[in-house]
Length: 430
Image (tube, rainbow, N blue to C red; front, side, top):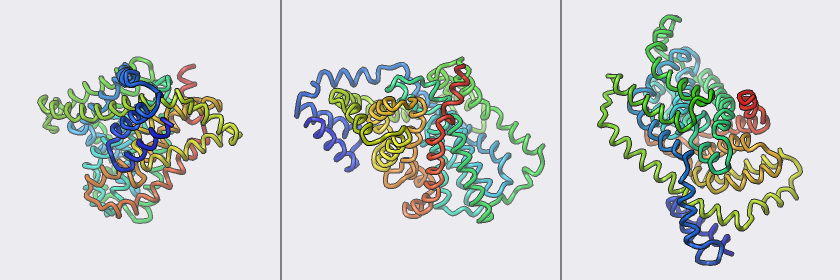
């Protein structure tokens, strides 16, 4: 009874657009006061313990790094380098936007930051090459999702900490699927560009190898950051938290040395404020979700759900298909952080009972959550991109449909080929 009341309150308030942490907290309080699921002191201890984790210290640093890099010109350097390589290709400016979001995501771990930082730079060029405003907005919203699909990802940090899964292994496992998804997006950009004859007007600036290398060399310090970050994680020289700190320090030094950025040390104050607000809202959701997770565990809902699945599903593929549909559907209406903190432990437990590797499941789970960033009506990336581009909601939703199809195809391939996620961790771990 208490669990039923909890979910009714939570889902009802969530659909009314009440802030997610408040909706979860009221749901848990409803369960506490309507039964004997847990007492208030237990709930408060669970909230404190859930965020008292060294692993989670990576989250605020990734968020801060994203804010700093958006301001100091790193995103511009990444875009220029990608433009030098792909600018002369049909649909090249669209491919450049995808690649830039992928690289920026690799150093910020944030999809929203990738949309905002790359969108401001890419939009004028997209317009200049006659890409419609609706398609440009849909492109940036979708490509921004690579901020979560390319390691390091804050979503995987939360998943790993909640389910006792190695975050380094998750980051390594996410690399090939993330690159594959970026490749799928790029192929669509090329096909669209060829059909609509989208190509740069000033191709002479990249008509020789020497000119391309010159632009890439000028962007070397921006390109060096993802190499340092990912290299330190994959070689074991630094933990994800330490690499996040390195990215913050690197971005600050880059901004101070790059006179074009206009960055001053006092600008950190506003960036820290933004980071604190984003981090606090994320961790507040995580803290409130801990009480909900405790009630779910005490009521043995994961075991009951797993038994129900076992009675009706005979294969691991069938299990993954059902779990995928659940996450994608809820992602259309519920915030990704809430899905990660509430459903993550439940579905991970079910996956383990079916013999599914938790690292592989974590990658697929995160990609399915990211799908929700571009699907109406919630579609967080859509609204960020719309704000930057000034596009209308109807125009964007019409142009997002082909991107949804492309992403769905990529998700099916990644789900059906577990070794795409597991091969690299097995090689790195010997």
